[in-house]
Length: 152
Image 1 (cartoon, rainbow, N blue to C red):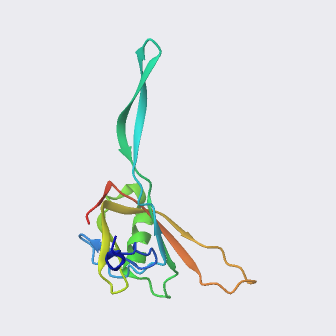
Image 2 (cartoon, helix red, strand yellow):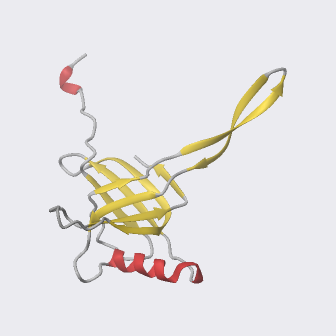
């Protein structure tokens, strides 16, 4: 095996999140993202004679969660969309957006990417304030979505 052809695995701290869709949201700089999960639910079927078989039932996934420093005094495009969805709630149709999450190499080239379809905010949270700590105020935005799939 030649050692000069070994490609190191990508690092998880260099990533990018982009909106693809009807809203013009450019402020997608996050400190942390999570929730790119997929799970296949199964059901156990009794086949008789003590034999059981496990079969797939449906795919499910968690919510996509993004953390970032609390935005400045004026609300950003993303903050405005989240605020609008949270205040209108179920009384108004929610405009979903698609997201692309890219894991980048040191030169900024995508190494892996995931397409998240039909995302919309379902939870907004701000980390607690503590006068004894010298930490950046963080907000967390959680998105429900229809599907995610790896595209590269």
